[in-house]
Image (tube, rainbow, N blue to C red; front, side, top):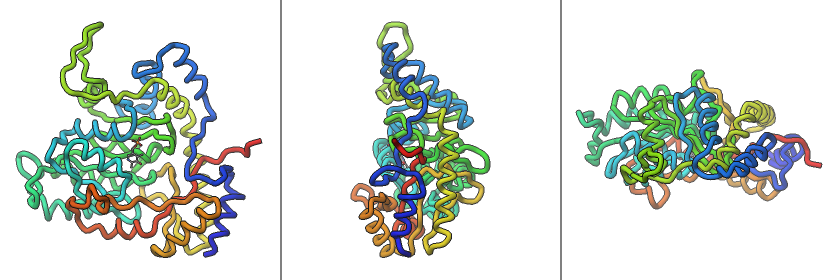
Length: 385
Ligand SMILES: *Cc1c(COP(=O)(O)O)cnc(C)c1O
């Protein structure tokens, strides 16, 4: 394909007016400034304040969970979620090799080790079939949970991820993990506004985690959220992310080594304003994805569509090139012509920190790594004056 056609299409048809056209920029066209001013005027700018409570409630209501706990970023939320479901040092956590590095970093912060299981090609998320095969082959179910026969270590959690906002087959994954007594933490950092079989992503496992980094579908500058239907776990999460302080009007008594991972009120103010716009963003993103679908239909490039049974937020659009050579040519031509495109992540099992980790057959992840490229996906806005 002549990639210049794509460059022209993006530059002239999609109302993405950045120059160069970037992958994803935030849109602040709601009550952001007003809510920030409220925080400043009230002096509540830090880790306590009404905006934090409001933002948590908005996320609970939107995703349909009982409790949400805001954190400084998504990585911190993942770290806490893993600790809360019982990931202890010297245990193992099953995850997919195709993810942003934060997933494996959070596992490492618990002094646990990632174990890599392949993804499905259509969802780009953890494959239930490959997971079941891996567990059957490697794991012995004991009264203490699932023990990896190869390493002798306990498998203390499983972390599937909803890649670019496309849901993985999360119901099957949870069912398999339940049978093996492995708690599921969903890395839903990219999938706010994405559903599987009518249920919001992040709400299938014991805990789900969202990110509100600057490039995500809504942003708080930096921020994250744990969501859960387990009210005891939620209380523990709040405790652990707020220095473990025993509630008291004035005394400082801390019950355990805990964290200062609370989201500042200023950031939560942005979150409240962004949540008011989320439905609009989702609609615009679906329209943009629809335009891309039409465009790529007439080419030999595959545009990634939402998987069966899923409604995706289309956070980051992606295409699949014929092979690595085509991928590299596509990346060069687009980036040289003012259209930012980026390859999917280098597989985690190829990074120096994780290359020693146990891995199953990763052929789908390797296939995708060679071919998937993200293309500009911002919410289109009116042309600036
Ligand atoms: C963005 C992201 C995170 C981490 O979020 P931060 O808020 O940047 O810490 C974790 N996992 C995935 C898959 C992400 O895309």
